[in-house]
Length: 168
Image (cartoon, rainbow, N blue to C red):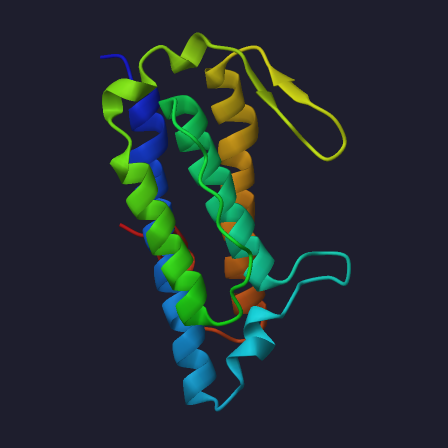
């Protein structure tokens, strides 16, 4: 059986976005239980030169919606980066899930062999094909920013374990 680009993108993204949403729920519950202003957590970072939790979630969402759109042959939607609360971050995650699930599986056919070019701040980034883009750029970035979100909350005392990350 050959795995399709759709199967390597959308179901995995759904699972991980579900985990991300559940992790954010635990962060919100922790803030409420400890009577902490949630923006303390959403503004937290692991190191001074790293993005805060809010930006980590935004980038994870942008990475996977961009991958699904590019591989699915549709326009990448623009979402303003204005979230500050857990509820707003969860809404963004839900919006991205809805978007990626709206792309028909058939749209992904052939995307594994099509070259891609991303317009970046520091110049264009070229990929020989969609498979390389997904494997070596989009998914590693997606996982990195979800992992960093998890780590920021865990570092700040939110009780999270590997099962929260893996989900299911």
